[in-house]
Image (tube, rainbow, N blue to C red; front, side, top):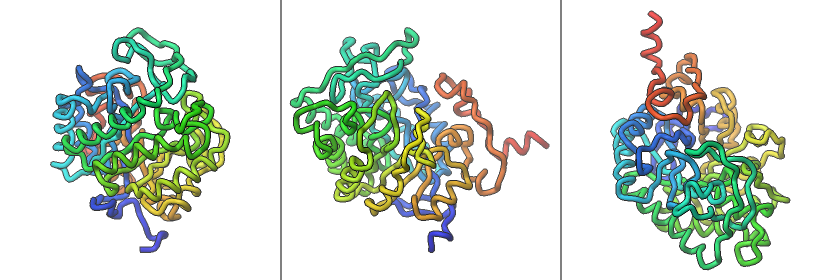
Length: 371
C-alpha cells in the first residue's frame, strides 16, 4: 500500500500484534484509582468501552512508591494493583482490544505530601520545578527535590524492570516507558535540569544514559517487539528545557534505533508547539522519522483530517488521541461514519466516579435519543 492510500482504518502490524486500525488511545491520567491506588471495575469498564481503538496505552502508572505525584493515580507495585489491572486487561481483551501499560516515575514533579514518610522527591539534580501540585491539602508549591545518589540509580532502573514484570503478570500486551512531560527520564535528559557531574550528567551521551539503560532493561523483560517509549521533544513541563534539543534527540533516537523498541511515541504539537507552555519550537518529528526505522506514533491536537494527513504523508504510522478518546468511547466508528463527536466535559477529567468517565454516549445510543 502506498503512503497516500493509507487510512486510519487500516489494520497495522505492531511487532507481533495486529492492531485493528491505526488509532491509538493516548495515555490519560484520570485520577480514578481506588484506595491503595488499585484499578477497579469502573476502570475496566472505561477501558473496555474504548477497545475498538487499535491500541490503548494505559494512564501513567507508577513503578514505585517514590514515583507518585498526583492523587488517585494507579501503580503497578503491589499484588492488589496487579489484580486490579488484570480486571482491565481481561475486559479489553474480551472485546478484541490491545493495551500497553505506561510505566511512570514522576521524579521531581511531586511533593513530600505524596512521598513515603514525607521524604523529598528524587530527581537527577536538586533543581526545583516551576508551578504547583494539587494535593488533599489544596495547591502547594513544588519544592527542590533530592538528587539521586549514583549508587541509587541501578535501583531505580530495577523499579522500572519490576513494573514491567508485573505488567506482564497483569496481562498487558506490552509496555510504554514514559520519557515525556517533564518526568524522571526527561529530568535526566535536559541540561537545564540535569546538573550532575558524574557519568549521568554533563555530555549528551551521559544525560541520555539513564533513558537508554531503562529502555534496555525493560526490553530484557518484555522484548523489543512489545516495548515502546514516549518523548515530548518540545515540551517544557515544570520548567524543563535544554540548550540544544536537536543535538540531544539526534543522539538519543540514533541510540534508540539500535535498541529497536517497537515504537516511539512523539508528543508534539502539529507545528512543533509546546502545548503546555504555548511556545513555538522547531518541529522535531521529521528528525525522529529520519533516524528511527520503527513505528512512530504521534500525539498533539490531531483531528481526523490532520491525522489522516500525517499518516498518508508517511511522517507517522499511528495517531494517538487524548481528549477525543475521553469523550468518545466509539471514536473510530464516529470517524468512520463522519458522525458528530461528543463534547468533552473538562470539569470531570480528574474527578471521581462515573460522570465524565464511563457515561459518554455511544453513537447508537445518541442516535436513539434523538428519534
